[in-house]
Length: 138
Image (cartoon, rainbow, N blue to C red; front, side):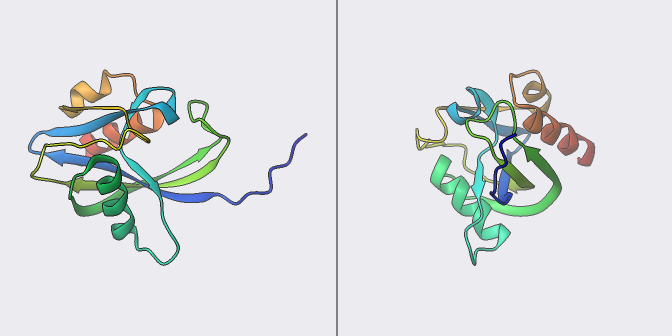
């Protein structure tokens, strides 16, 4: 048995809404599945600062942080490129701009879709649950 002596990492994930659509992005880090942008919170950074920075770095979008919808725990997710234990704060954000400029490091493609369309796309299970909870919260 291999014991990994690494602490869980706290991350943020952002479901970005613009009018009646949400942004989904294809990520090679997630087996080329559709996901929402996000990443790690840096030391001294607030949740709001982290989600705004991550989204700006990955998509070029400026967003408004609205709230944390819920928290997910990802323990060695099967579709992720590394063995990790992630605590993900699932944030709702909004933007008025729909012009995305991908970083092409974390994300390789994007689509603005309705949440219902998003549920039919090839997403990782965490993104799927995020969209479902978003619809329940609307």
